[in-house]
Length: 279
Image (tube, rainbow, N blue to C red; front, side):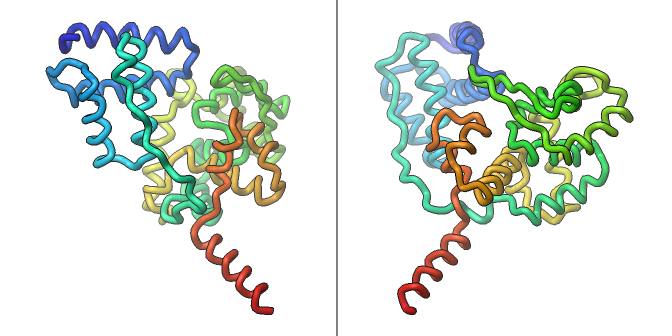
């Protein structure tokens, strides 16, 4: 494949392929971004088995293992699409963490500070809606006027459809907002052009809150709100199967990542075990 003309053509066909495979818009965007990064790594070199291997080594120096594997998934999908299956590379083997990093997990207190810093703005309602329902940021578009009135939203994502209940407290927050903003149908949270807010809009606005809220920017991103919802729900219910259904996960192994305790919580459990052994 000669760069860049044929690569550009292949990327266009690959994008259409992903769309016909019903990948979400966010997934399509990520795959294309990852493949462009691979293209930049290649420069003018042709694709052969050695290049993806070298690329994998390059990624391991720059990114965390989970991110490397995510980028390799996109690469392997592209290689198979262009008939280069023999060039696919294996993902890194990652041992499941027993506990999560405290410097990355958003706490309840930090979430409350973010909401307070957002004051009574649209962003405050967005934060509370995501954290109060556990939806993905890409699913925020399904929080419609009709859904708020009904108390539940029908979410279609990754070839799955599930019902998300909207708590009464969230409904009470959103109804006055809908009336004030003049939104009478469709998505509650829209841009000035009437389009649903996207990940970029929300990410940018959340980052602007960090300093006012006194929360590390490393913890402030939309998906961490979903993690906080999952941990809070699991602490009450302790039913990982029900939580997996709520989050729209196909595998409970994915849900386990969301319910992993922090290192401090893990240490407290170990200390409790020691006390039991010594009494």
